[in-house]
Length: 462
Image 1 (cartoon, one colour):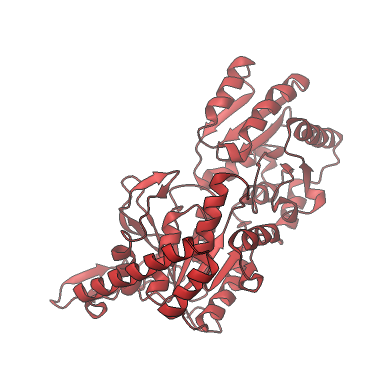
Image 2 (cartoon, one colour; image 1 turned 60 degrees about the vertical axis):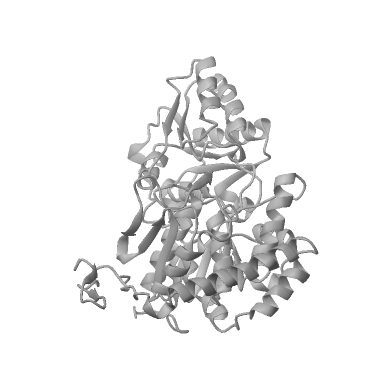
């Protein structure tokens, strides 16, 4: 066990989400960084996601983090299709082979995450869920999603939210007991996001936007802001990183107003390239219509940029008032906020990038996130797993007379399917996987021999 390891003992944790590298986003970064810090603290951690193109099977990342890229069909927006049963053979094999004790699922949008929670409870494993998003209550999609979330979380051991606004939203949506919901914010690695004023062109003012180009990120607002401010400030430039269906809207604006030399669309960015884009700017603009936390504004502030953002969701909790200008989600309000930032930049009243970075790096760290998550694991590890009869009673009493009975039936069928799989392939004959995780440089050459003496896995010595 690594120095400073867990007081309550090491856990074997399986992180499950449809969203992981090479896909880019806040959930993906959260899962990776949290996993690395938990490994440093002496826990065994693996990640399960779906295949991304030719990236299939098992891959090893830094510190021996094992990632299973499963051959499951993607339905929409990188989320897999689900029947609640088709993924059980694969997930059950992984949970048994890796001797998983806690299944930690991420994101309400991830079908695989909900499948994993459902199967883990059937197998008697402890479960944790982290909600990274905010939802409404009125439209049809929100009503259906909230009902499914109620079913998924009613018998989950513990829920983690990334902000207090997110906690309030999740508790209301899923009708949860607030005592089983903790708030653990996202974080940023300050060594990855450092200022570099020499990269900026101070003869112009550059506004940076790094975001998925989708509706909920407010790209329609951005399309209204760009022509208005470019007309008013000849020295203003926009640098936009990200990809998505709303890119066509920005291309149309650039074409209509002949702004090709002032609006650069960089397309999709690798995470390691984000910092190099941020340090080219003076102001960071976030136009999101809904956010539970928003890691992008922390990364931008860590690079020394003045942040201008919509006042939505958990964003007001993230940065102090002197580091962010909050605006209503409208073109006029955001333009006013950007003009205020431009005026401060011209007058030289903004804090230096180094000063801002030194403040931000003390706010959120992944090691602190890992320590707090570890306490959640220690708590759920001491809880009694609900037997099947109590689980069925909770589903039927908590989820309504129709939905509750339907999913109680699914739970019974899931249990019978698990019994069949255990009869076909007993747990005792499933090979135990090698634990390759550990601090960097601590790997050793290991062999796992099967019953016939064949080498099953071989790990590098460095």
